[in-house]
Length: 383
Image (cartoon, rainbow, N blue to C red; front, side, top):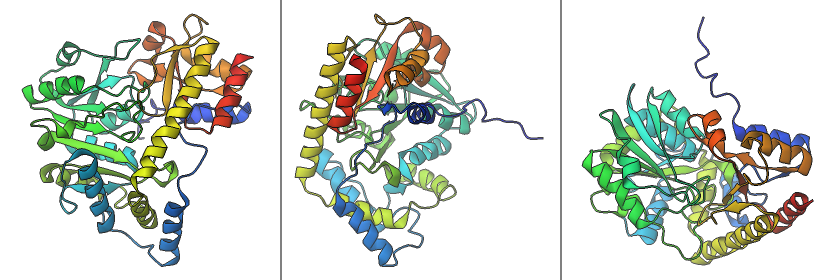
């Protein structure tokens, strides 16, 4: 009989808390999906594609027009030039791109470093490749790290560093100095760097977003992963993509073609329309999200939560240790059941959640909701 090798992962915390929110009629500030859609022009382009019989397999690498537009967007935002034909690939979401990266570049017994807390799919991807995810805990309360924190965890088995900035769940946008620390360690030990940049357009207060691939000597050893879900408020479309030099792209494409083969064809066509939007769209996106961030954070502060104000993403991680002795998982469920507001406990974003829960008391709030929903959530918390 086969063993239940994946049973240790169980149901994701996002499913658990969303189900609890539904059961208790709670405001869902847990799972990171907007309660509004992106521009109608994007949806109309996908509908037109379906009606125009553009519904068969796309090229496994992504439809050519989409890859051309992704290349142009990257050059405009970072100055980096990537070939649509040999260096850009479209995936069924950033999660698939991450999964394919683990399978492409890691082998049994290898180690990959990442900063904790981290997005919950990372350990599953490492497990699928037979590799070990080694965490570098970010230092609270400001969620920072030192070069020694990173370098001390490199071993002869280390093959890669996974860097998520803007960072989920903390909202940190790593500084250029921090990114250079990571780059220096990668070059010193000949490591691959995989960057999860799905919140790249959600950076606030005019802060600079530093792409790893722009740093000296890093383009050739970096796989850039991003997605359209957060930028265009279409999380259900699952259109992600990678930028990487040909020798890395070839490996990614080999795995991708034997997983989902291609992302949904008409949705790729819709995203072409998204990438043709003018700069006003991105400016408005940041302004409106910054307004939501400030509204939520001001409200949480008035209630008594403590936090490092998020610099990017659409999440705020709040410290409640002075309010309750409950573990974060119990506190999150208590909020859902009694205050009717669902949040995410952050201990689940560590290798050892039980140990993490003994050291800190943090929960994550999502502010990718309209102001009326955020207002309702805050009013419930105040009572």
